[in-house]
View 1 (spheres, each protein chain N blue to C red):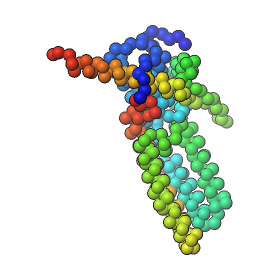
View 2 (view 1 turned 135 degrees about the vertical axis):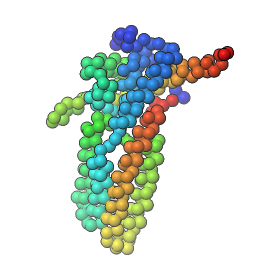
View 3 (view 1 turned 180 degrees about the vertical axis):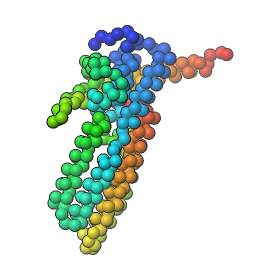
Length: 162
Length: 105
């Protein structure tokens, strides 16, 4: 655990501290740059959700929902491999949590009335329509979550922010 | 409120950046950190060994069909040490700024 004196001088003067804080900001900014999900992740996630809801509407949920869940796990795994970074981007920072909350609430506002129409009033296809809307919303919100995480990390808002 | 505490292990420039990177995520692949910091495999391994010995960083090796990879994460101890170190760095800069604003011209 020994280190050379040039590596860790232990200097506690103001310029050294300022340089160290600048290096931390730089590292955070570079991680933030890496938190850019590829288009296929956002589109894949949107399609998976749309497929799951459409399968409930069009009576093939027994394999539609598990298929969508499998697609979700595969997309998450592929994203981790592609970026070399693992994080729950939907709750990683306060900004991401805000966007995710809006996403969930808006999705529920679309799906719940559609479910009532589909199953309570026999409006065939209501859930499928809601699925398409939720899918599009998921793609848009996915990009917004990425933006929020990048913005928060660049501002120094991670779990060690003091 | 985190207690400011200077940490000699973390303060080395590359190790500070490694910890700052890992603090922002759950885990990061060895190659991603190496490429981001633009340092060699051996230099990164050396710094990681120091951080692992201090139990600030944990490593998990995974093997797929194509290649092996090592995923690194900051431990709870490491997060606490980094937070304390950053608090100390900010305390030093704030103190200097405060002193500068009070000194006679």
